[in-house]
Amino acid sequence: LAPQPGSAIMWFRSDLRLADNPALSHAAQYEAVIPVYIWAPEDEGDMAPRGAAEVWLKESLLALDRSLRAMGSALVLRRATTSAQDELLRLVWETGASAVCLNRRAEPALAARDFRVQARLRRKGTAVHTFAAAHLHEP
Image: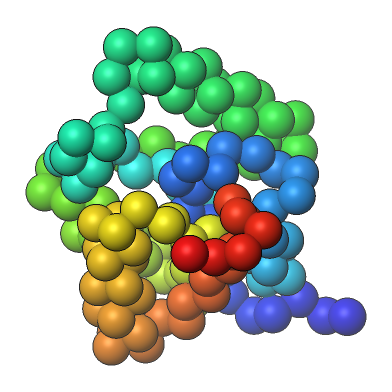
């Protein structure tokens, strides 16, 4: 099969793995994959990583970047200045990505944010592909 034209942003969030990652598998069908993690603790409110969870996140991001580099890629790390939504839209504009792939989050506030992000991306003509990756059955 020929790859889909254009590039896809793979938006990593809590799914910091290459194996068994349906969003990444879909993104890999494009000519190019842009792996991205956006640090936006304000978006997560009380659920933002702190203490040991923040250390785990940092180490997991480093491990993900090492794995990507071993495959000839690299993780794009961004700190959201306003929100993850705005930073993701900025990345789509900067890279010219034709699609964004992500695994859905189940937390109500983050699911609502993701719905808003998807709507804005689609209005701007960017394809959005979402997948269930963290649960056997979605809530």
